[in-house]
Length: 292
Length: 292
Image (cartoon, rainbow over all chains, first blue to last red; front, side, top):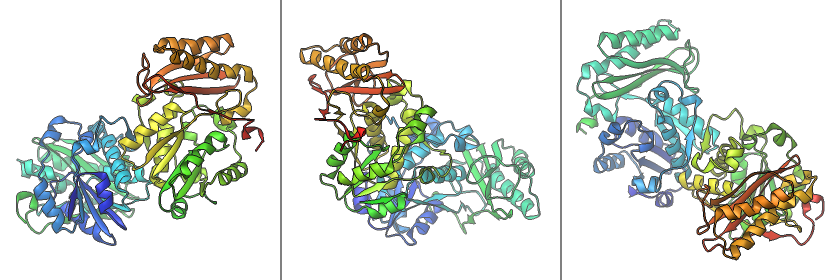
């Protein structure tokens, strides 16, 4: 594996069909599943690692975001990464950016409503990675469901010749969706209310429930019972990232909540027939906690 | 020369170092000078031809914009174009675009102030051409001075590995800057006030004048004398596209005015030493008027 901090060297190190996995580092099994998927049919697996200040709407969140390049490099390499692009801030933003890529309609609800400017930052940095690294395929986790919709639409609208591939939400043994921020969790019991609520809603859908309000209510009730106040619970069209009233197309049921100081998001995906994709579950503790 | 209407075929037809000349068609000698410059050191000269609705802030202007693909194809070919990319609307915008690329700071003044949304449309379509066609170099006329600043900054901010090259303003025999819209001009005498004013300002700069207000005043006086009301006259930093008070860096002195139904823009460029680039002048009538 080669490590580089510049776009031009990254391009020079890549050849053939390039599959990109954009990350903000502090890798976990969710990222590694993306790298594994990226390997299929790719000549170069390129992982980018950059904690993008443009997409942080809270300074404290940016400051505390976990960083460990040595750890990430070892994990990326063992997962089959060919090139690790870990640019310094000066390579990404040599000056205050004057250019913003934005998708207002896809950023209006859910994360977009609760994190002002977040998706402008995401769309801008991902456009930059696509422009500067020219991947043929790019892999994003379905855990960031609205982000996936934003990136897909941005790539299509701007005619980037890149295929966007969604990867599964990877969960800890107890159901908690993996997130680099999980290492800061103090009240794990409360955190589990998110996945528990989503699974209960998926069960209800499997039993025939189609109403968005009902499914959202099931999640909200689970959070309420655990003393966790939701920022939102929403059934949304998977492509438009806007709320819908019923199952019946590609959709996700998403929840965001603060558990102590940590803001968590999670979701389950639904096919047009109402079948749920709950992601995959680790058989043991995540590498986030120092295991291997 | 090959003609194609799709991004994927355009990419397939290009090889090696691709130089792109983005146009809205109805080509004139200004475009052809860009094509000629594009040929230097390029393996494929790619001309795009698309009247981009996103950048028209007036429906009437979009509707009346001159179009003649057959004429343009012949001119592009004779100038040395290898691939002509002339996409239909459905290829460029298969659905209402949800993604906008914008540079607020560079779009606040001059054209940006008088044509709301214009540079969002320009930045978005040019980002799309860069993303979908992957040129190594792209050529834009200096007549659209603010557009050149917007495109340069957009390409740099988004890390497109493309070199932006400015081409000279080409003028008719009488000094009028070439524009596809010139074919609609009824009062040519009045139209000449723009270039006459700019040249007078360049003369003043050559004689030592450094004040932006003075230089702008010279242009404004020339327009006033011809009975033409200016939309703006502005001395601007060439990279930031914001007004400056004095010569002393790369700058342009720009003017916009309506002459009858036709909106005209023109400018002269100034080096840091105050030397002016007035563009180049045709020895005879432009091909715009049916000559060859």
